[in-house]
Image (tube, rainbow, N blue to C red; front, side, top):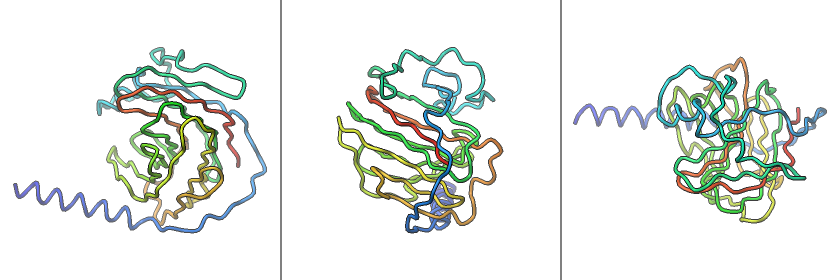
Length: 231
């Protein structure tokens, strides 16, 4: 009983320290000179060894870049404006798009038209892996959040604001990483913007960014287009 109380206190202290590390700041737009349209990605879903081992909290040593023939690419169909993503009703429904060699100062954006309702529209950055990353997310189409995953531990709701993207309408999601300043914009309007005081994740050798669409117990049905990486 005592050990459980002590562990709970330690956990809350750790969460408090993580929240203190970040400071709310005003978003400051910057100019980018290079634009990559539809940057190359590696697709993985809940069928893949990489994602399924993460869900099961297993360490396999597999990376997103390893050859994987389990991901169901039939979930993706290409349309004139981009991609239509559809995955039938199921538990732990993941569709992930991995981008590598991401610059320390960049803007990543895409348009989304959600037809069914997603639990998470997420962009992870400063990624070493799914177990070590920062992420901006629109959760349950109600709240924008910034969270930290470090050493497989989730520090949730480090920052949050009310935010929604109505169904069957196209909306632009942008994540701006400017050194240690991170911002989430919806339809070009800042929603969350903060400064990382101590660089909790540390230096990432192969800096990645991940675009994730997730439903805990439901189908994924959305259109994603106008994917851009600017730096």
